[in-house]
Image (tube, rainbow, N blue to C red; front, side, top):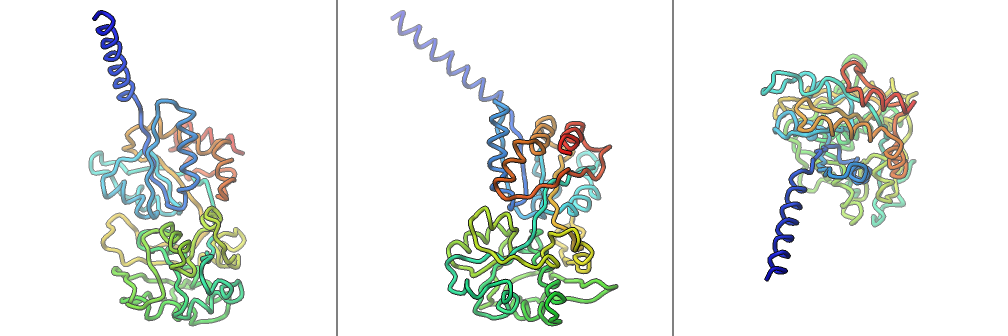
Length: 354
C-alpha cells in the first residue's frame, strides 16, 4: 500500500509539473504573405529549436489581408511580413489603434525580393505552347485557363495586372491588356492614361463571367494546387513559389517582371487603383515598382520581446541559408525605412549582414 501511495503521489507530482511547464510556454504569433509559407515553416522550426519553451504560431494570407487582420479584424500578432513594402505605411502608419490612439507601426525592414513569372502546369496539354515568345498571345485565347490572385487582397494579383499592362509596350500591342481581360469579368477592369502613367482601375465587385478562362483566387499560393492538378494551364506567380513547388515557368522580360533595378523607372509607369470601399484601411493606389518584401512588429504585439528576437533570427545566417535553399532572394543588406524607430535588435541584425 505504501508503495502504491508513493507511486500515485509521484504520478500526481509529475502531472502537476507537466501542467506547470505547459502553462509557462511562450508563444510568438507570425502572420505573413502566402508566398513565404515554405521558408517560414522552416524558420519557425529553427526558431523553436533555438528557443526551447517557445511555440511559433503561423498564419498566411494575401499581403493586403495580412495587414487587415491586424488593423481591421482585431488579430493581435507579434510579427507581420508582407510581399510589398509600400503597403505598410498606408495600412499601419496612417491609421491608429483605437485602443491606444497610436499608429499600428512606425518602421519597417525590407528584407527580400522576387520577380513575377508565368507558372505552367505540368499536366496542361497546352504547356508546349506557353513559351517566352508566345505566352502573351496565347493568354488572349479562351482555351487557355490562367490563374490570377485577387488584386483586392493580394499584391501578386495587382502585380500580375501591372505585368500585363507593361507587356503592351514591351510587345508593341496597344490592345493587349484589353484583349486579355475584356469580357472576362462581370464589371470590367479598365485602363486610363494619366500624366504618363497607365492607371488600371479594379472595380469594387470583381467576379469572373460564366465561361471565363480566368480563375480568380484570394491569394496566389491558392493557385498552386490548381496548377499541380491540371485545373489551370498557367498562373502568374512569384518565381520563388514556382521553384519551391517544382513548376515549370516562363521567364518574363526584365522590363515587365518587376525584378530588375535597371527597369525600375519603367515599372513606375503603371499603377493599380482599387475601387475598394470595403477596406477602410487601404489607400487603394499602388504604383509599379521592384518587388520588395518587408516586415514590422505591430505596436500591440502580445510579446514584443519574442517578436524582436524572431526578427533578428530572420535576418541572421541560419535564416539566410533557409531562404537560399528555398529560392527566395534576400536583400543584402536589408533596409530600414526609419532606423531611429526600429528596435535595437533589428538595427544590429541589419548591420551584421553588411
